[in-house]
Structures are given as structure tokens and as C-alpha cells.
Amino acid sequence: MQSINSIFKNLSLTQTLFKRRFNDKKNHEKKDSNTIYVTDLLYCPLKPRLREQFKELTLAEAYNPSTLQGSLIHESVERILIEELNAEVEVPVTKEITIDDEVYKLVGRIDAKKDNVIIEIKTSKTDVGIPKEEHVLQLRIYVNMLNAEHGILLYITPDRITEFYVDTGISDDKLIELVQDYVYTRRIPRHEWECKYCVFAKVCPHKVSVNEDNNAS
Image (cartoon, one colour):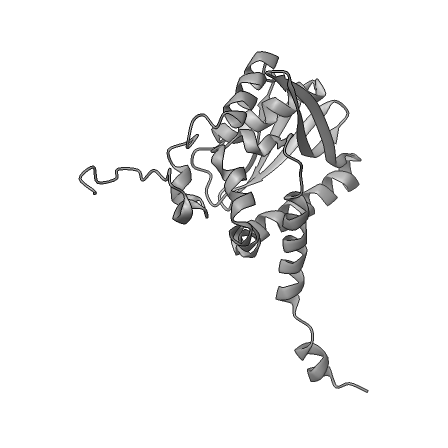
């Protein structure tokens, strides 16, 4: 019979948690060239291309403790919404968008849905600047795709737990424009702060540094 010590030596809780996150990340990256994730529309259009080109960096993101913590909070809140509100969670949603006679499939996964109301769960290290522009945009896209009544952004931060209501979805014309930005790789980067936090900045030829030295050669 194995001793307690030998059992614990063979049991890595840390490895178990990160393995789950790693597998989720790996599965998420599988898509064909005409499939666009809703999250691809929120940030620099080069990022999904760099994920394909530098797969090792892509998978290394799964070992970020901060993103793992966010995933664990997501799962916990979703369980509560199921038990207390009988909400649906991890709801898949798709919509076809045609650009220059080419059909693209826009794919998303909504955190939770109660009746005709969409709920998106967000975590942040601080409550400064919430709700974030890209989170509001994501929710408005989902409201459009599901023709929902409205959406709720639920923020979990160390300083505050609060919710914001989004009453209107994005228009079809604006959604097409966002897909065009992605397809034609316009607006690189989409936000000036992106490169500072992007794991692909070290290999990206379009990296932008905020307040960078203009005399650099």
C-alpha cells in the first residue's frame, strides 16, 4: 500500500489546473480560414495570424496564472448562475457575414443566458476604467447575433463586484465593418495599449510602443 507521502508526490494540483487551461486553449485555436471568433474583432487583427504562425507562444499563454485565475472565477460564477437562476452557460452562437462574395462564419460563446438576456462575466485586477470599451463591444455583438433583449456585463474585481447594462446591439452595418477590419487587417493595433500586453509583441513587425522614442534607428 502506497504511503500518503508517495501519493502526494505523484499528485500535482498545479499541473492539473494548468492542464485543464492548456487543453481549453488548444481546442479554442482549432478553426478554418473562414471562421472568425467574435474576440478576434475586439483586438488587433494581426493577433490571430500570429497565433497560427507562432503556436508555441500561443500555447504558452495558457500558463499565465492571471488568465487561469480568470477562468476559474468564470467557471465558479457560471455554476452559481445555473444553480440560482437556471441559466444556460457556454452558449454557442454563429452568424454568417459576406464580404466581397466570400462567406465568413462569425463564432462566439456566450458566458450565460437567462431567457432573452445575455450575461458576460469579466475579471479585472482593478475596477478603474470599467466597463472596458472592448467588453461593451463584445456584448453588443452578442446582442446582435442572438437578437437578445439586452445584455449584462458582470465584473469581478478585488475592489468591486458590479454589473453594467447594455440595451442595444451593434448594427449589422457596423458588424460588417468590424469583420472587414479583420479580413483586410485594418487598424493595427486596434488599441494603442495592446502591444504592451501582447505576447506576440516580441516577434511582431508592427509593434507600437506608447511614448516611444522617435529618434530610434
